[in-house]
Image (cartoon, rainbow, N blue to C red; front, side, top):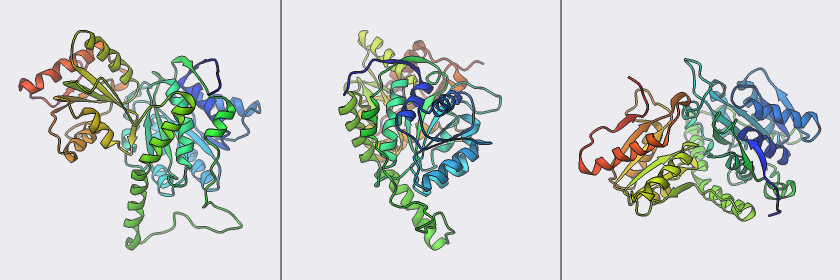
Length: 393
């Protein structure tokens, strides 16, 4: 790794800088807070000639993802980003992109969805996209956002993967907060993530039909193949992360356990809140509390084996959701984690904590209280399976 000085960058600017280094061919997007400055900075790079990309500012997010789909199908390296209602408008095309096995990379600056209108962070926009067939990462910092964008192209364009990737970054909290970011050199990025041209692409001289009409006698198999491709991407995701670690000194893993080996109680989370939880665990450990935490870096495909290995010694676990699943018995992450417990024949009691909707602060004191509630579970003194942390009334 070449020695470089850190840049002071927000999450959005760190992503834009990575996109410039990756020499993306096509960028298509529509502005929506809090991801807009990603696209603004990329457009500046294009205008100054620092990135020789076809920059398309289209009339909606639906058009943005459609343009990326078409460009990727033609053999271009593409990028887009979105948030909140804009991501919801893309929903239809997200399924098509993954089913066609197109290596589109998108950053989502996670933001609450209307109504009422709110521009702050939660995971209400991304959870409806769980089943769209995209690989999905959650990052904790601007540095990790930068690193994951570089990893994403290497993974998505791998001929054994050929799937689109979403990188989820908490809006405002990470998108607009500045921190030191240690970039790779342009040559290192080019060497690590060279453009891996698709073996099958739209070409006027070599005719190909993609996404054609499908009768019931084949549709089931096509959907299974898409699902299997996502499952089979796990070892490649892990391999790329390890190779990036050798290059940069930064490797994140599929999950990031902290103080879990002897922990009686463990919190499971995703995104920037994991940093606060880690600080709380350190504080409580100094007081002799046997607590731990696990941050999921990868959400889809779900890292079942890695998660189970991290929490297997716990007496109780708490799963933190930053989105509701109205009408369901629990939150979306809680459902995934408890399904993993069931499939692994583990009987660890679990509690669902709903936190931080609409950008509401989650403080160290709130997390300490979560651990207090978890300690009561083995004694039988707690009966509730869900808590709404910080909810008034």
